[in-house]
Image 1 (cartoon, one colour):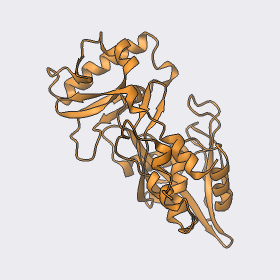
Image 2 (cartoon, helix red, strand yellow; image 1 turned 180 degrees about the horizontal axis):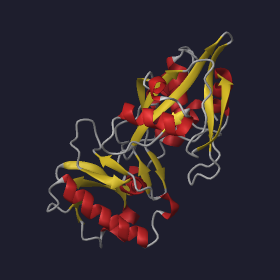
Image 3 (spheres, helix red, strand yellow; image 1 turned 180 degrees about the vertical axis):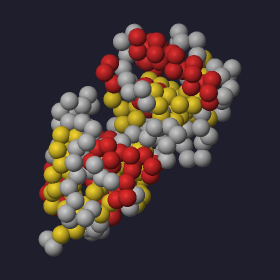
Image 4 (tube, helix red, strand yellow; image 1 turned 90 degrees about the horizontal axis):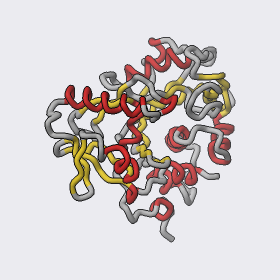
Length: 300
């Protein structure tokens, strides 16, 4: 493995397999051609025209769209879709900066509709005489997604109607028992974006990266069952584990690579420095002829 391998792994989407869907004039996401043919065609909520899907225009308010699409998704759930992943948590459908809030959608359905999601991902670190250390959690072995893998210190999806910093403070208490007065000291430092495909699901996600310097005498504690354990690792151990293995949840690697870049752990003279730094923020849709490998490989 390498840092570039992790970036490529997160950016494996082939948009030639997908078609966009719109709410009015706004592109809300992308649906896989197979999923669209099987599910959307008979839904009564979507119409296809020239390789583009449109949500029924009679749904002319966010409230109407949210209610009707949710009823549709409940029907899919009753038919066996989403398995154990149904969350009863809604994400905002507002796919680009400056795009108005279009509707809210059940979290487990969002990747099936290629809707941009995200949330806060925080690196909690400690300064010691021998250098930086990072608190590394291991995900619960009972989680339905990526059980037992390593994770960012605190991370969570972004529900509709909640601010990012507010959500981070909540997640800090739930996942790591970090009190609000300490969690509020976390600083938003960057974003990480990627286009990841898993079968018929698409995640064009943007994660907001936070840093929080924790007191040397503070120890995070698992609180809500999401985390199996926390361990304090020297930053070099985290660096090497990310670089050489797949022990961390796939997208969490990108947040840590961003931390390494910002804290000077990756030399500017490294031949991969520029493609790594640029590859962490893939916010626009990949072109259908875009080769992620060549796009992230420096030209000789």
